[in-house]
Image 1 (cartoon, rainbow, N blue to C red):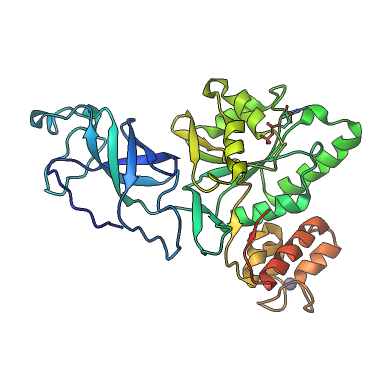
Image 2 (image 1 turned 90 degrees about the vertical axis):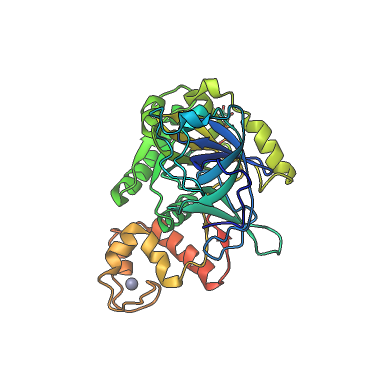
Length: 359
Ligand code: GDP
Ligand code: ZN
């Protein structure tokens, strides 16, 4: 990808980095050498034909040209410092200046690396534009509560299916286990058993007492993790328990979202060690599903897909067809009825042929 941009100053090098914040006006980019730049985008990026309100999103890996360096490197330093964060040559073919000499400043984003995935939200207005919430998400923690509030199984299944469509692994994190009494314990065990059998890792935690939280911390290292879940399940509490030093203004951000004005602009990732980041975007509960073909829906329910290999018809929708191995498995309780019902409800959305958020 390239933009119509002429370098005005000959010796500015290209720097590679990670977009960690999007304010709506500019992007904060952390260079591979660890310096922070305030960057703008110029030009017209087109990403797989999708019209977006933002060409660049948090999680994007980008190339940018610093244009306001606090310390301009002197030519005598070229290639001589042993700092090798930037292996590229600049437009003029000069050897890059050592990035470590640049203390940060402003920059202009000139290219985006290919994305491994991205989370998109369709604008609510009629412009048919979309907003990319985040790119290159490595995994997702879906925070769930059995009580206070109850997370519907259908919400979980829709979330899992859309995450499958994006190839993002999900860990189900059952929070507020300190509230679970004997009556609810069997239900919790049953739900966890259901999802573990399908192949989703499950964790039990209490963000309030800290139980299970240290184990989660270890899993966050070195990866970009999206934190999701209905409101009230304890996302803010969990983040504050994990990272008290971050002093997150989560409720402030939520307020900004609720006013609507900044709904599609501000987003930020929080560094959690070893190059790991958490994305906590209030108001974004999951992945939207876009143009999922009817036949495709069953691919995103792992166990349904597994059994569908034995259906008589290749294009079986598992609703009415004879010799449907999926419906037989539901009858034998090899597929949970709750999962099958969630599948049918997503199929219904696709029948209506319209975009639905996956939650
Ligand atoms: P969010 O909307 O997902 O960010 O949820 P919050 O973090 O704001 O939590 C909602 C409510 O649940 C608050 O009153 C928290 O104190 C409470 N809460 C969060 N985690 C736990 C937990 O592990 N146990 C209990 N008992 N309450 C919790
Ligand atoms: Zn079938």
